Length: 135
Image (cartoon, rainbow, N blue to C red):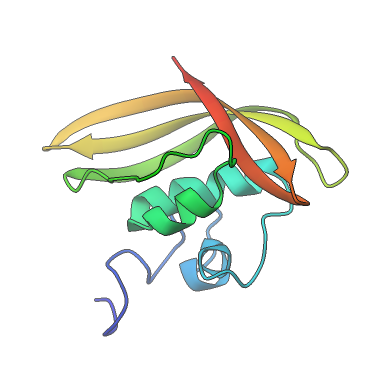
């Protein structure tokens, strides 16, 4: 059960699949205590943001040229797992990176999978999501 003032999903194991507690993993990024060191780490933290309903983090980590004015998260979706399929670049010394992933979810009790190849770039020294191609 979540403590008072915490949203559901913010206690326990991190949704990103690291096995770490959420507050010590993606929770640190969501709270603004750290920036993602790699494109893959940013993608994982964005998946976790979808899982815990943190639209503000998603907007904050979206490239300024492709960021929507608003983001409404679906309340009937429950994100259930993440698989990283492939990464290209996106390391500590790179300026661009690509991460392909499969995100599993349940919507109205039915399972689904979103497969996306996401592009990331550094903006003002921080990794941000540029765009993605779903498959």
